[in-house]
Image (tube, rainbow, N blue to C red; front, side):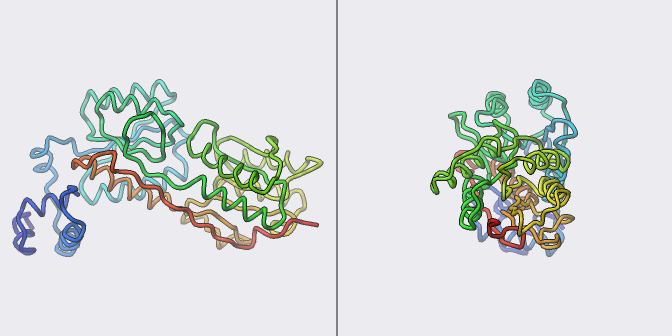
Length: 338
């Protein structure tokens, strides 16, 4: 099927159909959905070579990762959503791996100079991210997965990490817990700093003293969480509850709790952040895991849509999405012992 055939079927101009398929902001949402549904049902796929020739685009989006640490389950889920959306539009995803921050900056300069990609996705931002500043200076379009504050307009999608941790911590405080450990990401990363703000706000609102010894900042791995939780459970005033930054971290904490001869949900409570891994279901754990929940795969799909919108001319200052995070209570969070 040609674009002309699809346009005639819909009773629209070829220009309108083309702009709808490419998410141009001047096409209203009703028309865009109507065109997309008709294209799917009739099996229409734009000719990638013709599209690139007409637009001058490379037909690829870039993603730069720092080594094996960033090629874990979270990135796998993100790429599942992002890559599927782009593949359906015959847009390639170019993944580059580097070993350091300086190599990452050099990779963005190469991508801009070579014109191999039309845009990039910037992930794991810091509070003031120099990568975002560089991409703006290079005039390389991008969408940020997360947030940063560099004093310039940016396109971004983020989840409400502060609100999520404030709600989770408040729930544990309601259950009588005072010694609540936070297993967080690396210092300086925006999501980690926002989560800590939510945690501290909840403690402060209840007049509960903050103990720096109860915060861990590290990569989200089972092994690191296991060792750090072991150390905390040996403290004279041990924590009675844990906030785990990911389901991988939760597994390590759970192992430490069991090794100490304690029972999750009665002796110790835990709430984990769940990126909704299909192979690690909080409902299937025993006991079932209380979570703050937001799908990394859905975020990948939505960021792919936002990248197309930015490339289609939507002002980056209008591309801001802050997603709420669901708190799902299950068996792992119970009243404080004693």
